[in-house]
Length: 49
Image 1 (tube, rainbow, N blue to C red):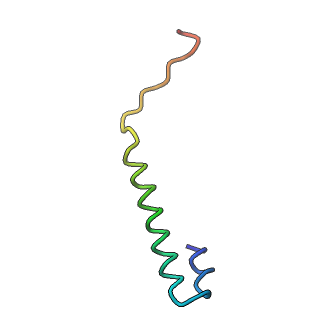
Image 2: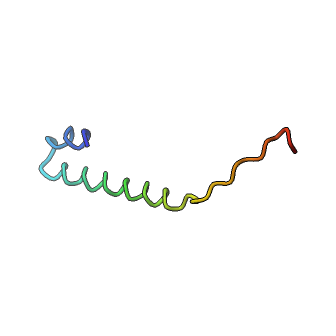
Image 3: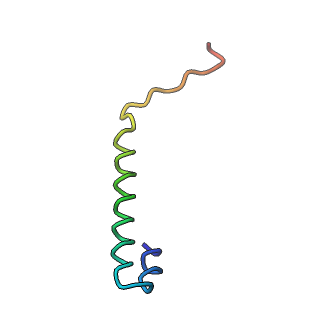
């Protein structure tokens, strides 16, 4: 959010573009988080193999 304020003075539409970019990256992160498995399986101990 702080970066959007920094670019706000460049041109009149830069703040909106920065907010849209931030929202798009947030949606990419949300999509990546949704694809993670919900039930984690503990790793097998290498010594017990």
